[in-house]
Length: 151
Ligand code: 4NP
Image (cartoon, rainbow, N blue to C red):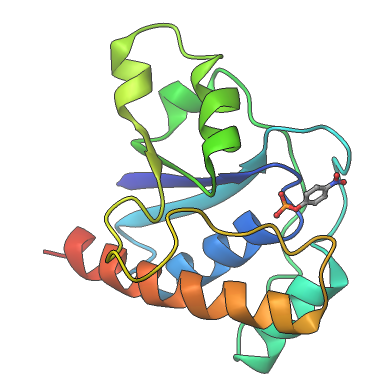
């Protein structure tokens, strides 16, 4: 079993989308996908209604997810930890105990082409178009990640 964790700040906008999208592209008997936030603002809550709506419009139901905070034990429980932006990276790496922990953390767009942004923009203060753009960005990168992982 390969375990992949998606991390953003709130765990209500970006990482729930990344979690649902990647999970939908991988066989459940070989891969486990989860998500968490570095912040503690929304623990126990559903994803943001705008993330739920854009996921639903793309045929994905993410209402089984509940917000949780990233914790140090996640370094033991996951093989790859994808973060959405540089600030998430710094917050996660702060909790790392050693270089092995740090080596698990990657910016999700790190290997994206030079024409796309290196960070997934936070749509929290934006509108539904921003959520659709984030969905498209994550769908594209998760397609690449899934095909690499399945090799
Ligand atoms: P996310 O977006 O990190 O993509 O889930 C945010 C959600 C909530 C807040 C910030 C970002 N917040 O400040 O409550």
